[in-house]
Length: 150
Image 1 (spheres, rainbow, N blue to C red):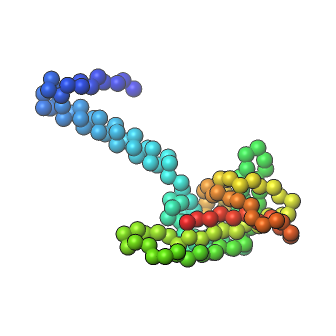
Image 2 (image 1 turned 90 degrees about the vertical axis):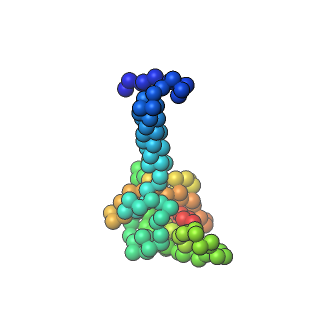
Image 3 (image 1 turned 45 degrees about the horizontal axis):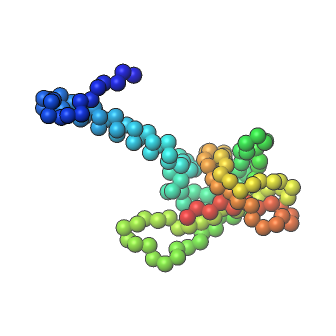
């Protein structure tokens, strides 16, 4: 891609040249910002931005299998055993639209080791998305992992 020289002293440009260069610079800047915003946006189930995902997306999938994709290891099949709403702590300002915080509890066989971290998770109905999972409790019958979305 050929870069055009942009004159730094606007007084040396005619009106049309100045407007053309300013428009081009603005377009390049806008495209760059859009690309960064799209690449930084976390996508959740059904392609919904992760910050907009609600417990209602997961409630119908309680009792179903999810697959956790781990680096350098075979994928891990887990079951969603609980989708728990946590309620609001105090009143949200009217101009802020916040989702109700909730957590997801996943279960796996007792001998499964999964360190806390962010993983790619897939589900046959919800699609593929990233979740931060943390181990919870000491395994008695099965290992439990939690994702908190607030």
